[in-house]
Picture: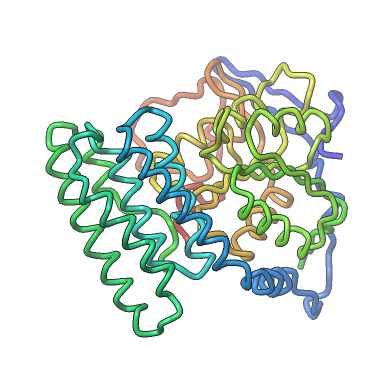
Length: 192
Length: 181
């Protein structure tokens, strides 16, 4: 359904470019409904997502175990491109998923770890504590998340680790303006 | 008011993380979609794209073999036998401004920063269904028109020669990505 036939596609040619227009191939799936229509697809989806939430703790445990294993491999055998990528991907997945799974502070710490991996000029020279503090904090948050009083502690931990990481990255990238610009730029991700 | 008949849409979801694929599948099925195909890497997604001819592609960025950015670039081949015009929604943990620009320049239609929400996903799908943009082909780019708004303060050279200035009243990809969802 998504593709129009070639005769429907209109091409206007200009000196440097072409503008290609076609009838909207997806117009047939749009349906006008009354303003009072009670169907709520977003609400339905949110409910379905809530129905999955019983599995989130297990999923999060799998994600943090992967992160932990990736760092153990580096600690034992040093950085290679593959090990660096595995550590980055594990942290990056937690950055993207953890808030959905109910661990927003872990997502913030994973983001901070991703920035260290991405912007440190030499990963071998990054103090080991910077990695271990991030990873241990994520592990602790996931294991202690059921305690209500730990939530504010998690958020504070996340803020402090981010500051330590940013201070380090600002220092080691002082002669690399293209990295410095990215480090200091605000995130576009929705706020917690 | 418009609704989408999701049961008439075919989706291709590409994410290497099985948990995120499960979440996406759950959300899309809850919207009413029946046909949701899944790939765990860019290469498999490209094969499935040719085979199933999806209406909408939702892809992660960071993936093994080749990533979501390369997938978008391979779909946006104007001379390909397949469909180079399908809307591509990039759903990613990357949340830096420069990433949005890079995704835009690869031909991505919409950008959705994780964490995912039902509302954010629905809005992106509604936008690609209801407000498709014309495609632009230059020597270095093929994809949806990247000019979503006019900048009256722009002082540089007109990079598109031979046409009147175009006005497309839509928020920029970056502004939309920034908006709280």
